[in-house]
Length: 169
Image (tube, rainbow, N blue to C red; front, side):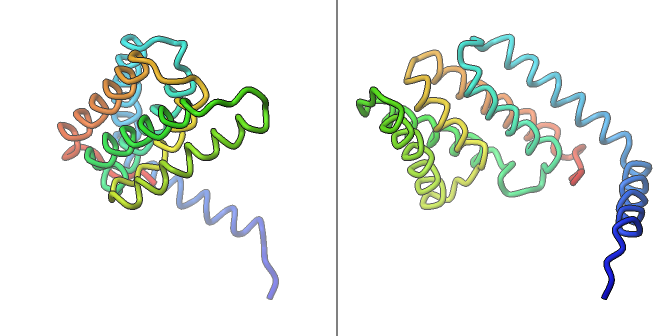
């Protein structure tokens, strides 16, 4: 059986164009809504926590492009980021002065976050990034405020706009 790359690519592009024509207003609306919410979050946060902010960007993608996905549920968004915050904070307390022990600690933060999210039924993939970011930058009250504020704001935006949102993936 011969695989025709160009024919496959043409079919995929046709499907993308068809979906875009059908949902173009949602593409614009949902991208705009994500932009506004992330803008507000960034206004409230301190840029020294850029590593944690990156995981919030991934959360915004899930919430606004896959609103019916189980990982977009507010309980999972907030719960997952809280678990990531907790595991990253605990691992940041482990003494690590050179590169190899640091790598072990950072990997452990992600592993613990994954275990707890799955065990507590609060799976939210970007929260693994929160665990890693907090393990790297360390615990601080401003990190807690940043993670809680952004995950709650994204969850509220999801909750109040869910009836207008469509899955775009």
